[in-house]
Image (cartoon, rainbow, N blue to C red):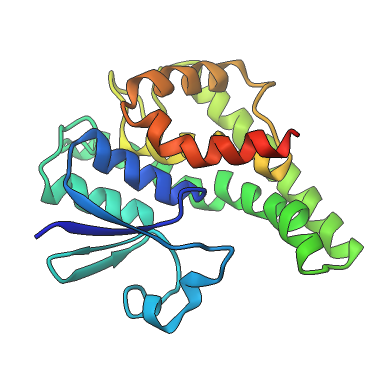
Length: 221
């Protein structure tokens, strides 16, 4: 059976899963679910993923959410090339480290800024709440990007090794959408070089990022 993917093309986790699927020619059917339209909270979608979040997959009746978990599952169930999620326990632990680090650092900071600069005005947050979110987001992102930049001064890939891993895909999808929240990675040369490198190594980069790039271009007008 063909795998079903439920996704929103603006979402970082969704684009990461899509890149892994497309780069490895894993046959799948795409169902677009609009986060901003509230479609992830519909009763119908919650039959797919009770948490009401994207991405989700349904693989021969098996339902799974959480992008990092989905990517690990795909690596194992489709026997993907070892560099994505190494069999060696120590190399795999390095990939897992960055995947776990991602949620409480880089993504945490990004979501705080999105809360302040995107959802704050829409949901009419108080100025105090917006400023608190903005300060926390800026502080966490500065710390996170500095840490990533230092790590990338020692290796071309976030978890080391000679080829990209699913940790690279997950984190780079977060980094390239920072402009949505009013943030930037321009002051981090190793991060910039890493983004440029991955933009050529990930075959589906342009396709997966097309909607994001269109949205970012519209914001500049």
